[in-house]
Image (cartoon, rainbow, N blue to C red; front, side):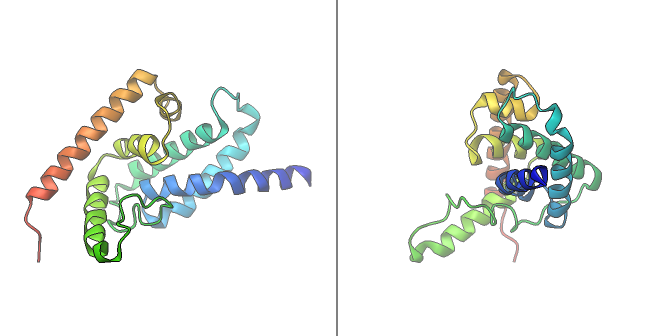
Length: 174
């Protein structure tokens, strides 16, 4: 009984971060499957967890891998409105009521551009900027060196900038 209670308490702490990552990386229909797959993988892997990285980073790495597996298998595009909308951080939303339409338009543009990125670019940007992880933890989550994480982050930023510029240059559809 103690193991089940401990697991339940641990999963309640880890689940929101896993869900936030899954929302960014996979279609909404797949989020519950990711949660289940990550919970199973974490439960089974807890005995082999070595503590070289924080538990949250280790779980995030598992989550990113499961999400990339789903992306690779399904090749489905994410719905534009669903990404970032469910995040607890709404950094890009205007505070004043008079600017809500402008903020919603900007958020939609950012979502579209974010979703146009390759899943690994989305993962690195999500780790570094939405979760505010240092490069050492980004590297651990991605399974690469810290320098490689820096390079991936730089490339992902450049890709996001290119997509954003391209999106802003295209005329809107009626």
